[in-house]
Length: 311
Image 1 (cartoon, helix red, strand yellow):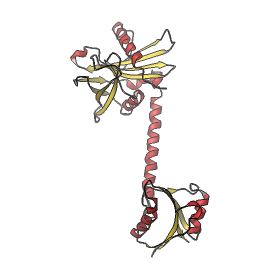
Image 2: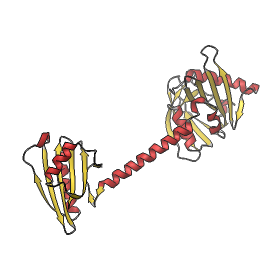
Image 3: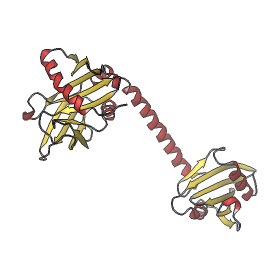
Image 4: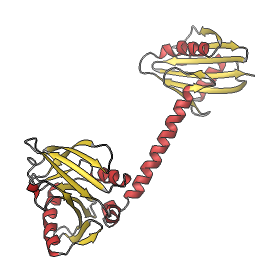
C-alpha cells in the first residue's frame, strides 16, 4: 500500500544532506540515491533527491525534490524541500507546477510538520505523470502562509533510471502501460457507444445502449418478440435505456427518430401491463426501402426495446 510518510521522509531528507556533503550517496543521472536500514524497524529505506537548479535565495543550496521509499511496507512519499518556511504542519499550500513545456497545473500540497517540506496528495500518481510526460524539467511555484511565492526548477535527468532502483516504483512503467491500455479500452467503448447512438441510420434518443444477443433477460426478449408479432427478422437488435428522468418519453422520441429517418410510423400502446411493466407497445415504420418494427417495454426508469426488420 502506498501512503504518505511525511514525518519520516522529512527526517531522512535532512539526513541525506549530510551524505551529500560526505560523498556517500550514489549518483544516478541528476539524482543522488541513498539506501540504508532502519535499526529499529528493520525497514530498508531508499531516498533519491534532485537538487534544484534554480531556487529562491532564502533557500540557500538546500532546495531539492525527493523520493522516499520504505520496504517491505511499500511506503512512498514524493516531496519538495523548499528551504523556507511555507506554513504550519499538516496544512496545505497552493502549488502551481509545470512539466517540461506542458500547461501549468494548480494543486494543493501537504506541508510537513516542520513547515519546509511539501508533498503531493498522490505521490505515485505524481511520479506516473512525470514518467508519462518523459519529464526532463519540472518547475514548481509554491505560496507560503503570507501568499509570498517561491519558484523552483529541477533537472530530472535520470528519473526513470532512479525509479528502477527504488522498490516502491520499480513497476511504474508496467502500471503506466496498464493505465494506457485501460484508457484505450475506454475510448473504444466510448466510440462504440457513440456509434450505437446512430443505428441502422436511425438516431437513437437518450442514452441508448445496443445490446449483444445474450445481454437482455430471455423473458424480456420473448415478450418483445411477441409484441413485434414476429421473431423472423432479416436483422434484429436489442436496445436498452436507463433514464433518470422520464423513461415513458423514450418510445415517443424513438417514433420521432424513425420519422426523421424517413419512415412513416404508426405507434400502438398495449392497454394491459405485461409481467410488471407499466407500459408496452410497438411502432410499425415503413418506407420505400422496407419495413421496421420496434417493440418496447417500459418500467420505472428503464426501457427495453426490440428492433426488427422483418423478412
